[in-house]
Image (cartoon, rainbow, N blue to C red):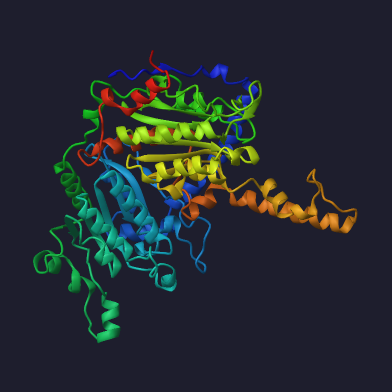
Length: 575
């Protein structure tokens, strides 16, 4: 049983379709991903070169320059929640990325969560949604037990919008509770203070295990301007809470350093002192290997039109090491595929919706559409999810789902109860779970397959993803149902009324289509990040390695005693 019986899956690119079809898909995807690149560039620019120059004139680095110096050479920064507040303005001002950078960064061979105030956007102030973004990153770090690093350069709340970020359960103060929870769970926290650190910004680093300050840095409950107004005291913020005070008198910081570069080198040294990653231990003698079929081909495999079908196994073949995969329960609930492959040399479970038509076991000889949850498929992936949780295998949900089966027969079969069982399973799992919205993420199917409301550690969207209760046309029909006949045609002979109804239905459909845009989801934190399809494999490598990095805090069975083997035997997988 020590052997995980993976098999080669996938076909060469030439078998995916004719050149004309593949070229059309590449062209459409390039358009969508070009928009993604432009949006990223806009966020990365902050408030523009003038503000970058202001930071440099003070002898400081920008937030992203600090992260670049902090990361291991040749490694990739995986930024999360890049597009929070995308498209929103506050008066005449924008807040690119909500004024903070949150990213998985490899430092001294260990994946860390870095949270850095963007000092090119209102001096790193906290905008509406900034606290929620910081807390989301802290929660990711807490769930994975990865070191958390704060690069603090924060002028406090953006006061004109304070009512939107101060109060409430996820207001700015909740950041400090998350600091406390990370500390209580033994997650290393390291803070570097580079400049302004006012009010809430002053509290943010204090619970960290190590606090470094540059000579330009200060941490204060109230800055000099407020003291001048409230107490008529003429004093600088450095006098109140600079390194002279907090390193040598109050003890609120540990070390003072001359500049940004020195502080970043010290942070790297602190990370170096931590236990090394356990990922090589869990790999054993297996080395990370690329898929046999290149991940860049995903852009040719997935049709931009969500009504077109593709082979879901071809997606797995471009995500798993050497394109090797062990499919579990292959003869049950064929609308779903689940099984185990390696990602970067480490085991991961996969669940993906099959597309097209599959045999209908309830009506032999007939077919039914896949991309929908039926009774057997729900039971299958619930059992698989439970087994992965028992075995400690990270679980990746690849969604392209239209929802649950509906109708009299579905209700009689108890789909509500089967769905509740799956939801219970995914709600109580402790193994790391990650969700990817490949294309459709519709209705309760989105929930059941570990959508964001069911607390995956990270949810990624592609530029093809569509997140909604139902499609625009379907919703328009539902909204105007009383005005339509049994064939969904407008049930009136009055030309003016017919025109008015048609226009209303079109407006509903167009609005819903706009709301399904992944940038809308990303802006309001309904998804964590939008990624290019060719980036997906790299993202999964990082997330799976994070799952195995910290040792001793969760169950990780060796493959000899996996519950998955028992499940396989019980359904006749081993004779």
